[in-house]
Image (cartoon, rainbow over all chains, first blue to last red; front, top):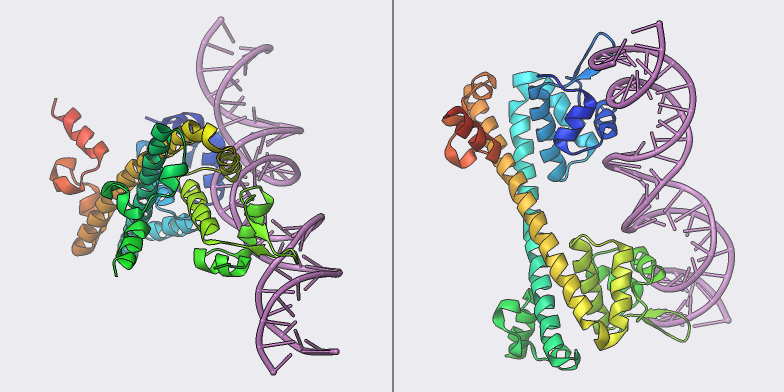
Length: 152
Length: 152
DNA sequence: CCTTGACTTAAAGTTAACTTTAAGTTATAT
DNA sequence: ATATAACTTAAAGTTAACTTTAAGTCAAGG
């Protein structure tokens, strides 16, 4: 089954212009063309685009993805380099997730804060509350530290 | 304790120009100035900047953060709106984390893939492997689906 | 054969979030 | 008093990753 740029874009949920841009930037050197010059995407190209999407979500730039594609084009001699790359990406994504977890902790605290303020009808009380009186599950790392220091 | 823009930037790990930019964009209407016009950041301003950073990490734009700051400036009458905002941000971050988990699954698969290729000295075998022969813990959602369909 | 919609390229335009620059002012240490 | 480091503003510059435009070509249906 072959897809045009518009069909593949639809499947991936991106704009056709995005795929043309990726092609121009050297991310899709493997895409074949019809006699008339129309791009023909295969199932394998779809898989490759999924990997490109994965690398993008892991935080790689278009340029960095291009150099990965070039690596992959060289075949088996770059297996170790590619393994190394994916390991680094995995660590980067884990770090991103840790950071998002911290953000989530803060948001949970803020939700608790405004729920309390809503019950009170004012921010007055909750804003002046001692960290010790904040339910444990809503304490942020900083508030826990504040308590530690005050207990000395 | 009062901080200049440079000191506060250092504490937050951003450029002084970033804080000046935020101020210009209306994110810091609460910052006081010295007689000579120098910004003086307080501990409370630091807390506010942490909240701004949190909202940014949750995916809000500078403009959206500005409208939150304006809301907060109106006092208790906007408590419910602010609660609503933080609840939405919490959901957005949960979604981001789910997406990152999917990316991580793919990266784990890719690491397994290249580890196997490295052992083999070639991608040849692993690239042709049947999804059923991929260890369960490295299977992506798509590969699981492929197996389901092939079992019919 | 002709229309129509999707394709092609190259080049210019967009956007957000800063960052840099230039010209000048403030604060501090000697 | 003066040097200097950090501050001030307004305005221009940067960057990445697209997106749009313009002018033209291809492919499928009637």
